[in-house]
Length: 235
Image (cartoon, rainbow, N blue to C red; front, side):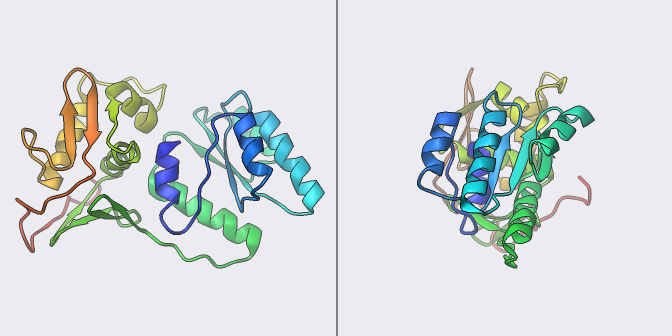
């Protein structure tokens, strides 16, 4: 949920989140969203979609729905579409795909040509989520999809510790059979690109025995001014 909020809530969308049906109904009682994102694997998903359909009938309007699921099988997708979902996104997903799907859905529903606003600030880091570029000071780095998702996930927790298990579940999915050091290896690669030292971190701190924590402050100390680091294509 945090990752979704961070991806969408950066000037293009206003986001309100609910973790169960009661919270969703409380929000919908006073606020009509242009789009709803529903976790199709949640026990309340069917009831929520029914609530949205009833509200649309009453208001003579349409609230498009993007469904999220960890089950990528055809049966799950057909059930989602039968319940009124407009589009399906399988978890794990990249931030840029979530943003692009959301923009397309709202454009289709409202007839408004919403511009894509690809830049978001994480502390003092500026991220272009479509080009996967990170700018801090005068330096520019290029991230892979997994590295960008890692950065987003850590930043979305606002300085809280994110465990390795949470990282695996969010980015690789529940069914992924992981190597023992897959998270640490990708964190290490992200740190190298960000020129972030393990012993004196400015962006990502290791919490021994627990996981990792994003540091929301930034110092330009140590960055190579004017340097541009670019990953090989497809890496």
